[in-house]
Amino acid sequence: MRLSQFFLPILKENPREAEIVSHRLMLRAGMIRQQGQGSFSWLPLGKLVLDKVCRIIREEQNRAGALEILMPTIQSADLWRESGRYDDYGKEMLRIKDRQDRDMLYGPTNEEVVTEIVRAYVKSYKDLPLNLYHIQWKFRDEVRPRFGVMRSREFLMKDAYSFDLDFEGAKAAYNRMFVSYLRTFTRMGLQAIPMRADTGPIGGDLSHEFIILADTGESQVYCDREYLSLKVPGENTDFANDSEIADIVKTWTTPYAATDEMHDEAAWDKLGEADRVSARGIEVGHIFHFGDKYSKPMGAKVTGPDGKDHFVSGGSYGIGPSRLVAAIIEASHDDNGIIWPEAVAPFDIGLINMKVGDADCDRVCGELYAAFTGAGKDVLYDDTDQRPGGKFATADLIGLPWQVIVGPRGVAAGEIEIKNRRTGERETLPVAEAKKRFGAIA
Ligand code: 5CA
Image (cartoon, rainbow, N blue to C red):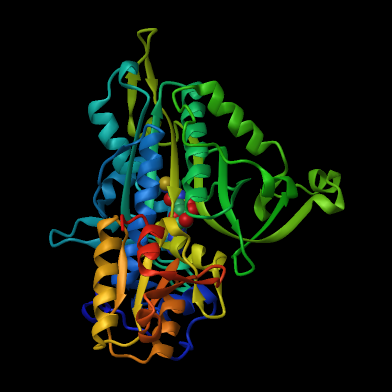
C-alpha cells in the first residue's frame, strides 16, 4: 500500500478528550473516529489491526472445535421474555420498537438467540457436544462509556456458546475455551491471567475473567506472581483429549488469582509477601458455565443415552476484539507511539523513501516494495513528499515492527537502513541483503 493512496488522518496534537494512552494513540494514529458517545468508526489502519485480532481469535476458536456462525444484532424481545432476562437486564439494554410496535432490542449478548437455534435443531445427545460462536457488534448502554474503544457502548465481541448433555461435558467444553483463550492472547503478544470472577447478568456458578495487567485497567485484581512465568500451551495441544486439557486448566487455576469481587483475604494472606501481585487489570475475555439457566426456561432439551429428556448444559465465552486493540496498545507503546506485536501489526514493514523524486531512491524503493510484497509481507510505502522528520515521526507513531529507510546518500553506496521499532536498533545493509532479511529471494 502506498501511503499517498492510503487514508491515514494523523493528529499532530494530543486530543484533549483522551484520558489513557491507548485512546490517545488510536486517535492520533488515525485508527478510529468517534461517531457518538461510546461509538466509533474504524478507519483503515484500525480496521487492519481489528481484522488481524479477529483472525487469531477465529483460528484458535476453530482449533478448539468451535464453529463459526453469524447471528443478528437486532433481536426479538419475546425471546428474552422466555429466558426472563428482558425485565432483568435493566438500562444497559437498548430497547427499540419496530413499525408494528413490536419490542426489539440491540443485542448486548446472544444466549437467547443461540439457545433458540439449538432448541430447533438439536434433539439427541449424539448431536453434542456443540460450540457455536460469532464475531458480531454488541450494544450496551454503559453507565460510564470511557477510554475510547476500551469501554464503549457499541463494541465488537466474539461470543461462543457451548451445549452438552451434562455437567461433565459442559466442564470439558469450558476447559477447551479456557485453554483456547490462553493461546489466543499469547499470540497477540499479551500475558493474560485467568482469574476467578463474578458472573453478573450472564449468570451461572463458574466463571473466569482473562486479565491483562495494566495501570490503566478498570479492575482491581490479585494474583500469585507464579502466573507471570507459567508456560502457555503450544500449537500441538490436543483439544480432543479432555484430560490433557483439564490438566492445563488445573495448572492455570491452582495458584491464587481473583478479581476484586471474588477476592478472598484469607487465601491471599497465606501467600508470601514477595509472591503477591496486587494490580490494576483490563478484562479482555470472560467465560461462564451456567448449566441449564437458559435451556430450562427456553425448553432446549435432548434425548440422552438413557432415553430420557435432558436440558442441555451450557456455557458462554466472550472476548472483546475492539477492546483488545486498545489493550495491546496499553501493553506495548513508548513515548513516540504504538509498538505493534508482529502478529497484529497493520503492516509488517514501513518503507520510507526519504527523497521522493530522486531517481535512485524511487527505483530502490520500487524494487524493495516488489520484493517484500512478493515475499508475502504487508508493506506501507511512504511515497509522500513529507520531510524525513515527519515521516520518521509517523512511522514511529503507527508502530509498524520494521522501518526500511531509503535515502540518497545510502543508495549511492548501494545501502539502506533498517530499524526495529521495538528495540530502536538500526542497521545499515546492502540492498540485496535487506531483501533477504524479509524473506525475499535476492
Ligand atoms: N455472553 C457472555 C460471554 S459471550 C458475555 O457477554 N460476557 S461479557 O459481558 O463478559 O463480555 C465479553 C467480553 O466483551 C468482555 O470480556 C470484554 O472483553 C468485552 N466487552 C464487554 N463490555 C465491553 C464494552 N463496553 N466495551 C468494549 N468491550 C467490552
